[in-house]
Length: 499
Ligand code: ADP
Image (tube, rainbow, N blue to C red):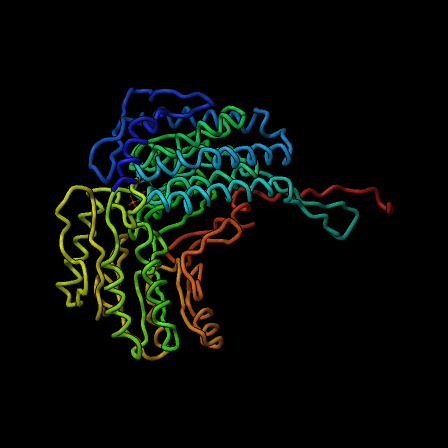
């Protein structure tokens, strides 16, 4: 296919990732101990390039730089308007370099470049722009306290934010974390995921180009067990924001408070239910459910991995869902015809394969997929399980791959109970044309986001986060900004009898 050859040639001549260093205090530097690691292309299984690996000393250096930029730098003295201008500039640079950023994302993560453009790059642009607008619009209150006092509140930045992001949507997770922190006036040390360091480094170059003062943003490529863990505990850090697995999130919650109290926000795993009611249009529901599970090769925290389908439409739904899933075009993310890229790593591929085997052993019916992928690349064939029961492992644990579970229901109160019978509470979905049913289900579901007759709609205007073990706090919207703000109450005594 010519488009494929073209994209390969394009990469060969122009798209070799250039930036591989650590971004500390406005400079690009090597790691203190000279360590590097390879980032792997999940389609070829070959290294793309070597990047500098942040050590604990580099974390110290980055926190010092962020601390200095917060405590003494020009950043604190800049107005919200000036901070907003820098964020607007960054947004424009993201847009201008969108092709290259999408290419880096497809290369490093494996995702289809067409989706990287319309989802990752475009949403990142929108996120920087949205919070740029907020930078001069958050205000305190004047409070009519009793007595001879003038009382008011100030919204002040929390300080130095440590931000740790995952590999599934690297650029967008960077935007969700950086944009509100910078709008609020915080400084940042960000550690990217070891699987996908590249797009964040390119954005680091754009941050420098936009003219942010040195040390306001520091970006470290590195691993969780050393750099990540050290960053989370660091006494110079005021706030920790993390997106990743629930297991690591619980660790971070504990570790962040070993040397003092930090503000913590977490966006963690899920096992999101999607309820397809008997009145739903079957063809449309199948499309929605397919997207809700297979988007990004199933590597989405909010993936609809428990599909509850009404018994009246169950058989037709299951059969047609399997047919649609089997039409996915597996391939190189750089090929514009690819609809499903590889999983991020061998480790993930093996883990997902383990779940598929468990599903079969525990008695679910595998309607499509379910065989091991033989070729090169960390692929998993799109797999659909029907006759899934609530107590099966594939109905309980987060799979984070292209594996769909279809469960049957008949009673609406019962399905709410079953949908809520999980420690997670990130997303949920409902398809119905009956407004009463839509309210009943939407209000009954214990999840941070409920999609009705749609799924996976993300926008910086819409708060996103989890109930229960799916997280703490919300990103996006005004709440996303408030994560990075403290409220200071100022009470000033007035002369007695004054007006
Ligand atoms: P996944 O299991 O999907 O790879 P993780 O939750 O392990 O996701 O990783 C998400 C991010 O958290 C990555 O940037 C990773 O390096 C980092 N991380 C992993 N373990 C720790 C830890 N103990 N402390 C801080 N960060 C960590």
